[in-house]
Amino acid sequence: MNRSMNIIDFKKPVKRSFRGNTAVVPQLEKVLTVILKTDVPVLMGICSDGLRSSSRILGGEFHAEYFSGLVQAGGSSMQVELSSELAFLDTRFTLVTQLGELISVESQGVLLMDELGQQELQNGVWPISDGHYQCTCTPRFKVSLGPNEWLEKSAFIGKTEYIQDNETLISFYRMKS
Image 1 (cartoon, rainbow, N blue to C red):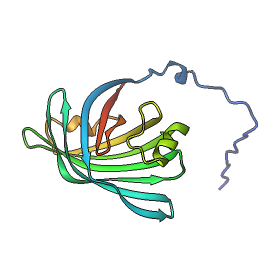
Image 2: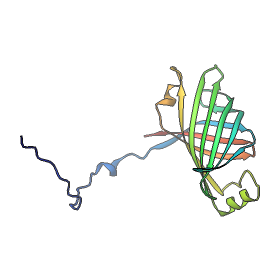
Image 3: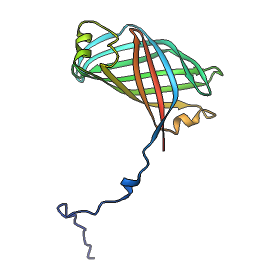
């Protein structure tokens, strides 16, 4: 049996697809605003991946176009500082709608600070002044079957703002094409 093998010539120019040039840029639709109330962070110390701290979520509230409710106490927000300007966030909490529906939220994020933001943080200032940090996240939602299933069937991005030392505002946007 004679089997031939296709060999790829990586030096040969490739004809580019035009499909990438006609792709529709996704639009963002604000769908959910959450205010998280957190406890004082507990410093775990320097770990293999960086300086790690954790905060308990004490509660909060949320608002959307078709539903609203409270943030259930008991979630957590973990932060890993990789450098003086970069930290990764992992936040998990549960929303309870006015009708009693539960919405589980898992969100991974990135916090970037400029030099002034880094100085403020080193001087014990929290929250950092607006405009001296950028914090975005990618949430995943888990819901029971029903009217909120669309949360599991869409892609989202979030923008995080630190309002007070123990309050965080997260605005979630759905990507629409």
